[in-house]
Length: 492
Picture (cartoon, rainbow, N blue to C red):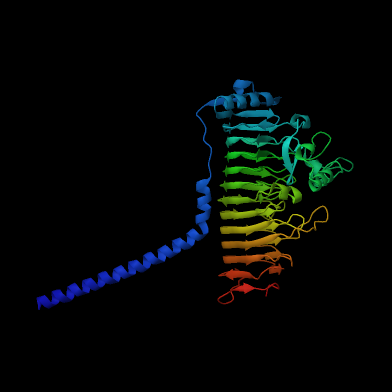
């Protein structure tokens, strides 16, 4: 009897072991499948991040006070800053340190292997005297290259540069400085005063763009009224901006143009002036924007690639851009592509961000027209929490127009735009708003695991392939429609 009991006991244990192995095998297979699905979304973004070179610097310190800088808020320290930067560069690199205090300066021009480091309590105030931003330098205005006032912090064709620390950069722009040139009473403009739409300003630059005038002949600056950007690494490699705060910008805040390997980490932008975009990568590649707070007067992040003829001349798409762990407050859009987009944008990853403000117009936005043309493809938005926006969670507009007629012969192409794992409390007027073109319909728009609690209208879609919905609801209504869930142009 005991032998039989031992036999059955052994058989029972063996069966349990087999079941356990089968269960573990199924579990492993399921986890492997889940991992593979996750990698399909996050893998390319992680690969981009791993390939970005973040600059490091020798352990050498060059305090600006050793070169004559005085932190009293009144002494102009432009020369002292440049002496410290030159000494650091000539020594092979290191940190140019700005200690606690209020340091007034004109434009700061960075050189290779220099980290401009601000200590806690340091405030860098930029001069309000326009003459301090001369002579003109090679820069850009709204997607068109020109010779203009120097950006407040500028680097041209440099390698391994950084702006770091806990300090504040105050552009001192306001209703009495820089901002009135936009031409809006809201920003201090008064009738009869000069502004950017005067004939000698934007109209002149637009003509030069159309006619292909060489950049060195597009001279503006004194006698003209086009505002400088705040921080502009132009044609640079290995750029780091970390920890600092930018406020009161004349124009775009961070503008890495024609630059490769750019990291923006833990930066706060709090600037509500005209065209105060937070970060505008343009003709930029391999860009990582993380852990930042954007509270802006225009788009929080706007990815660009040149305006009209200039964009087609340069022909460098902005690509391989990862935005993660950021908070977007006020602004025209959370993450935006356009409108200066003529060379195209591709491979954009946005993940783990929070976008929430009654003054944030859209979460994800693509804007172009038939003068810009260009393309946007391969955009992946994952794990985004949206509190409230004014107009739409996703807006794609190929009829974007301000100032004047924007119709031309360059048909934009937009394809493969994906939103996944997105929750929205209030989407404003629309859940999804798409205006494509009959000549080139918007293609391959997918919303997966998206929940929009409230929207004035579910969607408005014109001249687009039907939007594909997977496990998505808007206003409590499931948008799924069988094995191939799509919605037509009438939103029904």
